Amino acid sequence: MDIGLAITGGIESLDKVNIAAIASSGVSSLLIGCYEDELRWQTERMAAFVLKARRSGLECYAIPWGYGRLLDPDPRIPSLYVHTWPQTLQIDNRGRRCPKACPNDPRFLEWFNSSIRTLAWLLEVNGFVWDEPSFHYSRGIWSCRCEYCQRLFRGTYDKELPKRLTPEVLEFRRHSIAMFLLAARAAIHAVDRRLRSIVMPPPLASSSFRYTGADDWALLADSAAVDAVSLLVGEDNESLIDSKMATYTDAASVVASRGKQLWVWVTSDLENAASVARQKQLATSLGAERLVVADYASLVELHGVAKMTRILADLAH
Image (cartoon, rainbow, N blue to C red; front, side, top):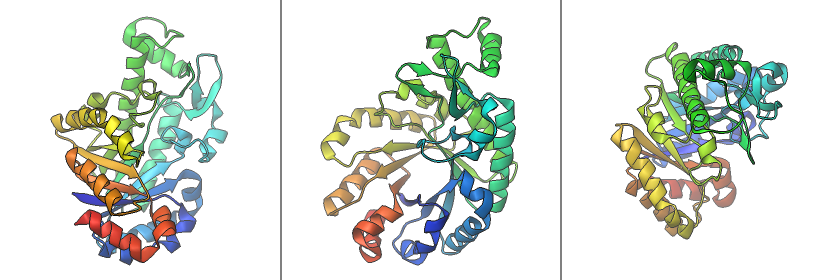
């Protein structure tokens, strides 16, 4: 099983990353947060970091964050696009705009594809991780009811888009996310067909998971746009993980039955040997090809570089 390490601190944190220590630990890949507003001005610094990591024998994967916030699990991450193109944002069932671009709006798709193609050209990465692509949903308020979603729904179902989340609306949103992922993969393959495409759906444990549009793991794993699916495990508490193990196992089985790789992404401080063993056992029991630990900065802050290196080596061997 390969070990990946997430680098999520942005451009200013890159100079503090000890690539040599990471490579010596047995970690095989870095997953690097690429923030829209930062890369607009500082792509060269990111490209230099990726090149240095690749020369050290590490695979690198870009995680686009911001970018209209369609791929944004954290609403605090700024997106200049959201402020520049408000007419392309999702419209909820109250008729209000949400701070999240619509995957069915051709103007957003054109901008997104152009931006991602440029990123793929400039960064010598091995692939891209599409982190939690989703429609807006919060306390019964859902999107999208923009003119493009209404047209597509009418053309697909031969009826008007309802104002309630009917089974047909939920299905429509799932297929919209699947089509967006196809467009995203086409964008990176326009640069290099060897680039891998990994999707990380919203957390299975989330109460709003089934309303995101990315809740059908079978549809995602079936897609030609997806080379691997990443399972986000947010809890380090053993009892919490055990209580959700059946759900995780079902998701892993769906991915395996489609012949796709499963990655397991854990947010853990890995405080002791028992914690390390628990995370490794979890990923192994699910048949994961890669265990991704998030993130570098928190591990270094808690343990220091030397101890972090030993912890990662325990995971890798």
